[in-house]
Image (cartoon, rainbow, N blue to C red):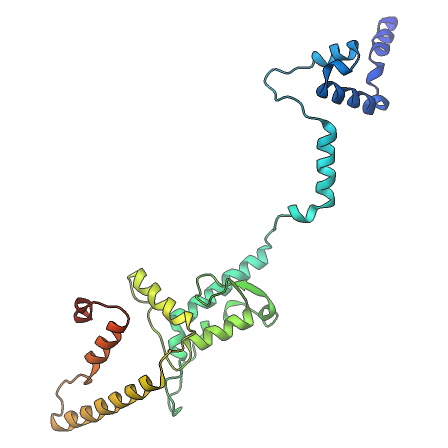
Length: 254
């Protein structure tokens, strides 16, 4: 028994770990050109199982690939999202939505500053657990049509206040038609709530509003208690609708 075990050990001694590099080199030579290795080694390599497996690749090429990968690991690094950062991102999107829903309640609609605005807590970043430190962080702005994909929270907050809390209040999130709601949203957010009217247009608006207000006062005094509508309203709506490409049927519907 001992002699048989010794013989088996001697017969397999070439497989010792110290010979690994030598055998691997022989095997690579065999893969490249089977006739380049000795007959005995070629016979051993040909007996390796091949059924159901892909042809073996040169191990040196595989090792070189992983060496290069280790040296240039920055190219292959994947971004691992921090749960806390993800939670902050959700809060930022909630802040944007809060301004869309309730920003009009903080719009500056009283030039005489006689009206006391109600406090709207969800327009405050602190309500969404966003801190002063977060104001210097950059976040994705989602569908906020500002022309950028990401912004610092400080810049985003300023843009939201300018868009929804300026001298024009926009209340539109109750609209059930998504396409109409998105259209209004795009128009408001893309110009940061600032209407692009020329000086002549602004003067005409003032003239028409002044005339309409005078007529409204006269009718109120002449026919007290009678229901009236602001004169000139439909003309203004029709003109604006036509300027924005509405058809005649659509203007009548308006």
